[in-house]
Each structure stands twice: as structure tokens, then as C-alpha cells.
Length: 546
Image 1 (cartoon, rainbow, N blue to C red):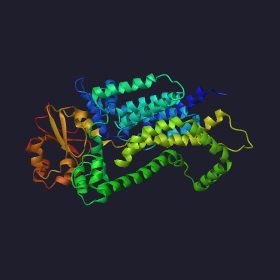
Image 2 (cartoon, rainbow, N blue to C red):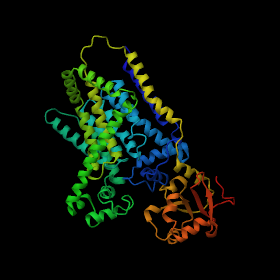
Image 3 (tube, one colour):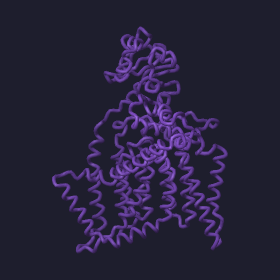
Image 4 (tube, rainbow, N blue to C red):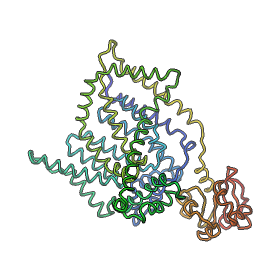
């Protein structure tokens, strides 16, 4: 009989094989996406010891980017390396988390692989939430191996403190976990003498010093800004007649709904309780439906999507009936209850960690990167439930472990085969193509660029690049807009031409760039090009496609 380590080695190999298929040729299939992660990366690049990133702006995530960038030296390469690692590590840590709960290797592997290929993993943006979740999962894994409850709570609190420097809301979880640990310690001391929990006291002292030195992660007005943007998202659905973008012009929707700008969520409630509760109700319904979709995407869809053949529904129905009939339900229910009770401290730590995410989902908006954290709870519950399933005595002997693992490996290869075939096909990456193209234009001096591709161009191209997103300003006079922001570089796309082709200045610029002292650089896409003012290029050359 093999040891648990041999089985775990096989499980990790299954996870790594799946991760290889997931991320193979990523840079040729997945484009650069503009998210808040760019801000965190840029904060790290410009940071000095005298000017550190704001404590509410994920400084640990900035440090993560800087660590990778020290090896790559190229911002775009750093983006892809970070995306690759943050798509693989969750699968590995989910596996370790399930194993720390005593869930067997094959169930742990199946659940972890299901998550690897879910929409909540590789496609999810921003990645700061995935990065933060790694701290939480690491803390939960370590806590599961602690014997004393105070030790479990202390380790969980440490992971929540670290997570707060990725997502500041988790500082609330840290405070709650420390409070529960202190209360439990005090309750224990009533009957039995207990030594002072030095680790917990030291952790709280370290957190206090961090707050004194850098401020509280919960300080600042991020929650109000987030509420405004996401209220605008709901309100734009209820009032489609408002001609504005909820992301770029959230203040318009706030004033329309509440009569003026709001200073806090409580301020919004007292200004218009009915509207505020409608917002909360919409978020609750959205949270339930989004959670259901994501769980289906992780647990069911990846496997059922491979079973496409005539009469599939009857085969699946027969399998479901066989499962129901062969399961010893009384023993299974008792085992589930016992397992749930045995891991009681784990559930407490995890639920307390997730308090801030449920608050955010209900009061602000159930964004996918917040539902991500809650998936830790649901998948753990599913894993423990599956581990507890007990079948009736069967007339045939159980398969040897080697055969079971071989069958699972064969099924996994069949599952991965379509993904591997898809990996061989390159897909359009217009944003990274544009960035690589702009890198080759030999500009010098300050670049003030406009267009309809919202990116932090200063992050990818250098601090001398500034970008003014047309969707944000909606200029009615392009000549005045160009003068106001000293525009000397324009990325021209068909959607931009459709919107501004009636503006006389812009029409003249497009028709004859040279007359306005611009030179045209053709991209490899026939309907896109870049106009650059003549004084920017550092060398004289023909403005041909590069």
C-alpha cells in the first residue's frame, strides 16, 4: 500500500500537468488587459523609500510585480509571467487546502482542476484578488495543522493581515479573528490556567506598529468611490436613458439618484432609503445567481462538456440513479456531520475571513473577483461532502489504488485534450501588438497621446507617455481638446473615426496629417495607424509600417 506522500506526489503531478495545458503559449492567446493591477505595478516601479505606495493600494502586490520584473526586465513579459503564476498557484493551494481537510487525493485533484479551468481563474481580472487569496489559503492550510484553537486563529489572523496589504478590506477580518482569539483565550482561563498567547500578542503588536508607521488599510475613501461606481452600474440598467458611462461618469448617476454627491454609504441610505435598498436587493440577487453560475462552471460544466454523444441524458440519468441507489445515505449523512464538526474551527476562520467580501458584495456590488474568495468556502464544503459519501457493500472487490489513479489520469488526459488543441492556435492580441508597435517608434521627449484604447501607457512605454482617454472627456471640439492636453500622438481606430469624423479639425488631420505637422505610422492592421507629431521621432525615417 503506497504512502500518502506517493499519492500526493501523483496528485501534484496531475495539477501541474493541468496547469501546463492551461498556460501553454499564453502570450499568443491572451491579450494584455487594462485593470487596477496596472496601477499597483506602476506604484511599485516609481516607489522609493521616501515615497512608498499608499497602504490602501496593495503594496504587497506592487512588491510581487517588482520581484518578477527584476528577472524579466520588460513590463509586458512581467505581465505574462505574473498572470501565469497567478493562474497556476491557486490550483496548487486549493489542492493543499483540501488535503489539509483530509479529503482524498482524487477528489482534491478533481476539484482543483475544475477551478484551474474555470472563468474565476485565468480569465479573471484584476489578479490582485487571486494574489490576495493565496495568503488566505496559505493561512488556512497552516491553521489546519495547528492543534490549539488559539493557534489556529492566530495563524488565520496573520494570513488576513498579509491579505490586507493586497485587499485592505481583510484588515477587518484580521481584527475579528484577533478579537475571537482573545475572547476564547479569556474563556479558557476561567477554568484552566493558560500561558499567555505570545504569538497572538506579538502579531497584534506588529500590526499596531504597521498602522502607526504607514496608516490603517481601512483608511481612505476607497469604499465610497467603489460604491459610487457600482451603484452607477445598477442605476444605468434601471435608467438606460442616461447617456453616460457608469465607469467614467459615476457622479452623474449618483446625483441623479440621490440628488447630490454622497460622502458615505450611510449618507446614501439616509438620502434615499428606498433606492439604497433597491441597490442592495439587486446585489443580493446578482450574488446568488453569479455564485450559482460559477459553481456550475467549476463543478459540472468542465466534465459534462466532454460527454457529448447520442443519448447522453439517459446515460447521465442512469449514473445519477446508480449513485443515489448505491449510496448508504444514513452513514453518509452521519459522516458529513462528523466531518463538519471536526473542522469547526476551520469553518469559523474561513467565514470570518470572508465577512468583508460578503459586505462588499451586498453593499457595493458582487464583482467576480470578490465572489472568488467565497469559492474557498463552497469548494471546501463540496470536498468534505464528497469525502463523506459512503457506498453500500458491493458484490465485487474495490479496484486497487494504482488502477483507480490510472483511470483518473486517463480521464484527465481526455479532459485536457481539447484545451491542448486550442493552445496551438494563436488568437488576436491587439493591445499587446499595439504596445510592441509603439515601443518601436523612436520617440523622444514627452508624449501626450489620445485614442480609444484605455491603458496606462506610461507603465508599458515609460513615464514620458501620458494618455487621455476620449471616452472620458467626450470632446466636442477636437482642436480645443488637442490644444488643452498638448496632444502629439494619436492612435486612430475605426470607432474613433466613426465618432469624430464630422469634426472639421479631426477630418483635416486624418485627410492630410503632414499639413498639421504629423507623420503617419501604419500598423499591421489596415484600419489602424498612429499619428505622431514631427518633433517626437529621434531619427529621420520613412513613416512605414514597422
